Figure 1 (tube, rainbow, N blue to C red):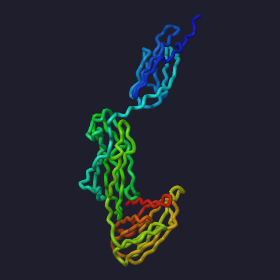
Figure 2: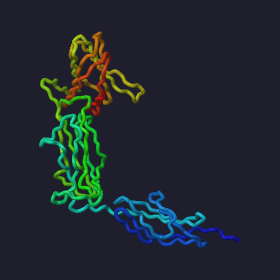
Figure 3: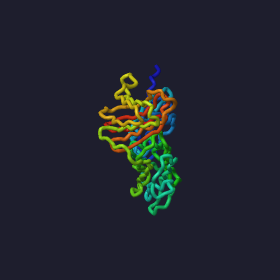
Figure 4: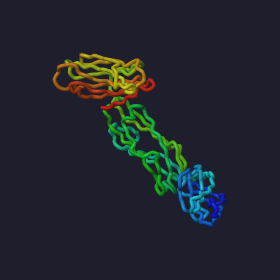
Length: 343
């Protein structure tokens, strides 16, 4: 009578040695009762890494520092019967290279005062790696740098980040760069805008906390005799070129979540050549302001919308009302008016 085939015998991991990015494993041999060939398959976090190993040792590579891994070794015979052993091993924390410091360098601004025009173009801010004497030094390994950009609400529509985040000073290099595209949006801000770039953390080197942030200013175009801000909400001023034109301003609230596109929540009729009103008592949400004409005047009408936020921040846009309407979009978030001008 032929005996039933049995799986390989139990075995155990005899030793393991973890480094920052690798784990070296040794295990005892699993033997097959029928003296058949036994091979091994390794899994990390249930993902198969390597199969058909004919020896009882293997080194796992390309791992992350200071990371816990669930490791499973499965012994198989040629009939597909198996036995297995599991363990959990954590790689070592990456040691900080001594004497290496990361800092922000001087941006490509040809002035002692970091003030830019709204259409400045590409602002390049170097992120430098130096030794204790402040001299450039090549990175012995990739160094990861995380940053944050803080600004007032108005600025968020005047730039785009052109650099992947987090940054990396690659092995053998002495620096990397933060690139910001400073651009002109449809609205012209009357107030100066400021933004601050800060290095928040560094992996693989020290952070030079004396040079970890820089503040830049985009110059506004402030004018005299501007309307006063209102604590009750944004003040809207509309002016236009032809006193015979009849301009209406209709405030809508976006009700997309209820299945409706919008609903009118305010109507402001104007029939001279200017009008001022305050958008007060509005609940949080997404709003837009329709600027419409209701007249028989031939041709386009030049118009300007000036919006003054409760904190005094001002923005304006000049445009042509082409026979019917134009639109100004904005949202109210937690009682703070954040303008999203989209034309």
